[in-house]
Length: 164
Image (cartoon, rainbow, N blue to C red):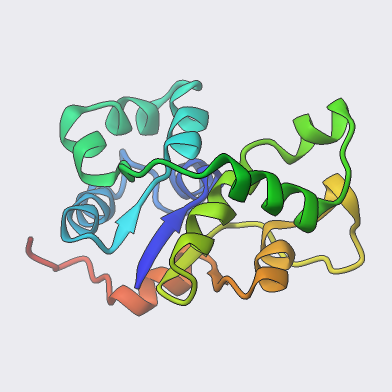
């Protein structure tokens, strides 16, 4: 299983769950999982994170982290368009901005359906419509597995005494 990280997984993971300055072992483990091919960050989500600032941005911008975690695949524009239209419905400019890069993340998971899981801190809200739809709900509609960072950690068996 390949876990594809949403930008919010890295940002919120650093800010609330495993701050880099307090839990460097977690981030070393995450980079190691990237090297093993278990965890990747699509380019669009990577760009979203590195457009900010802070410890996680500095860490992600290192050659070591970038090489380990960046998903190096080209994505079919037609698949992204289908994901956007079928997942969110027709969107105006404001809707496209609100949806952001989520359709790219979900599209990467659709490339190998069943072998890829989206990792996001977003919570399902099935009543939301259009640009307000949440990643887990759009994933569900396409049959794409979606989980939280904590579910991924459990599945990949992270412990603080791991050795790379």
